[in-house]
Image 1 (cartoon, one colour):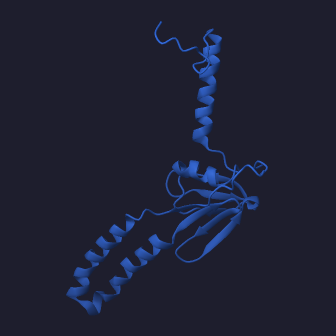
Image 2 (tube, rainbow, N blue to C red):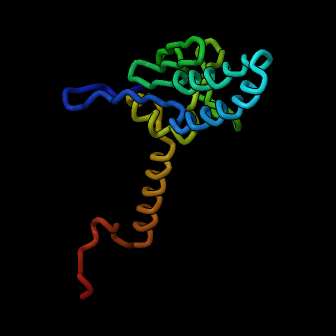
Image 3 (cartoon, rainbow, N blue to C red):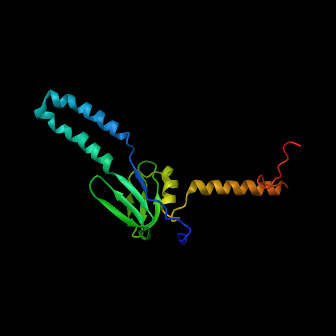
Length: 165
């Protein structure tokens, strides 16, 4: 359940997760590679010019947008909006992009979303998704604090500054 909004909290920003613009460089190399057969025999290989055009369109269009209202998934052809109430969880396969598990049991692939993007998604979701990296860091800090107290030491932030005396 997301935290209640108040007049002192800001709305989380919309987070757009897309393919790196460096992929356009790959599209340029693809155009260069298909240009040799196209110029060599245009009647037979002229259709190959479609491949770099589709690659550029794919890089420009495919993305996942995380908003406080839900997820917007855009593919090369089509897209879908998912409200947070429809989503029951996420699955991160070994290969490929993350998948959102829906309340009806189906899954929707989330283009370009991988496990390392979770901090960005957690921030933009407004508390609906927890950041595992922040949770791990908080647990480590709590364990360090508990260990310091069990050894009779003062925590570092409460320790008086002695300046080497």
